[in-house]
Length: 255
Image 1 (cartoon, one colour):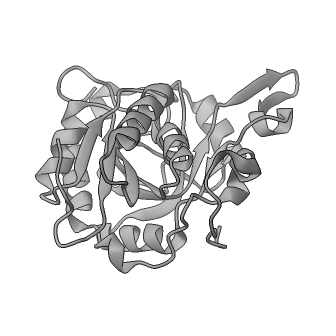
Image 2 (image 1 turned 90 degrees about the vertical axis):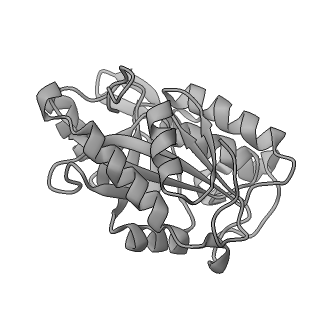
């Protein structure tokens, strides 16, 4: 799955988890390069990093795209979410006092912030909600966990399983990242009868087709926001200025 974005000089790589999502992106007709990275943050990071390393010409933008769960009252089923923050929601440790993110243990990072103007432009063009997208390794399936995630992340609009992994790979290669999720189900107790995977895939197609030509946007950081990645700022990524603003077909299940 390869190509160059229609009407744009920007080279865009789109990373999805499964083939049905890749086909939905391709139906948008933009000709973006598409990689099926696999399910979960580790597979997505590996797939994105491999594609970025193998590219004969560097990419200008990476998009983590696919379907996911939407938080009720924020992102309805059939709607679209564009991330203004990509957060690893379950990367950390359980303690007697509750969950502690890995950053409070003195390691790594738990957030990436896409270029603000690019995220806003994408959300406006796609008619999408702009908010935090959570990356989880275990999909939420209970009211209790839903409430806990909302308490810890009050701006959460959606959850999926790959965004943070894609963002980590993009950061290592000095490429800005966006995340776009079409909502197939509500975050909460699992109710397969309520899943709307075909509707979400159609919404994903429409959202990717509507995206602006990103080479017209000028606030892209040369690397993702290093304020969110102190380990990279310490020397593991190229130095650069940073923007100041902060089961589908085939048997897969929604994330």
